[in-house]
Image (cartoon, rainbow, N blue to C red; front, side):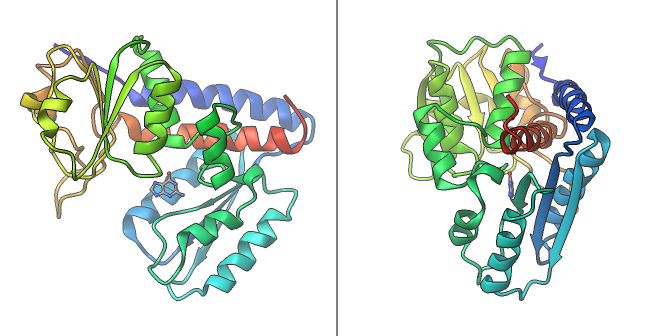
Length: 284
Ligand code: GUN
């Protein structure tokens, strides 16, 4: 029987720690604030943004939502980002992705002040992570590192395979595992003989967005399996990239979907918002 890594419990512990620190900052009249921008009406984005706002409220973090119509121009969006950059009551700015096609995501991300970039998507923060000298870590990879720590997974010297090479998850995830002294392989849609590479993994991290893609024959017996997938098949239940039923008997530990990686992403966003407030107020 594999250990089920409980993201709800670990995220609750991270949030409790953040709430404590937020309360201490409030004693000094510093209130961390998060601005969330959402453009258009993507239903999944709406759910994520609502959850982020709820988490802020629960932890004593001020939040405000900027819900813009799908036909918002780049100029309008850049003007909003600029105004949020200049506000002292806003510690963190998050622009929910994906943006409608006519908006250039790179340009918008580049416009967010690196000191308020709680997603850690700005090139200067990405570069800082590469060097290993950073303030913010991207929320999902950072959350996975917390889960591995909570589950007492040894990383040093282990073979780690990351499936997926996105800027949000795959690439930074590989970098964090490298910093933790794993030997890391990144796989993607053009990888040849993916199952054989996956079977070499002591730690398999799956972030490709294909429901039930990883089956038991792709997992080394005793491996630790982290499922980043959040797939919503039409009319069906939320499910991961890993076929949980077949993989669970083979591995030593696994994250469920829901209740695994998902709750961690929000907890780490709260942690980054707190960090942003501290940075902007020169508090260590
Ligand atoms: N869309 C999916 N995941 C994320 C995330 O972590 N941050 C932002 N801003 N948008 C997303």
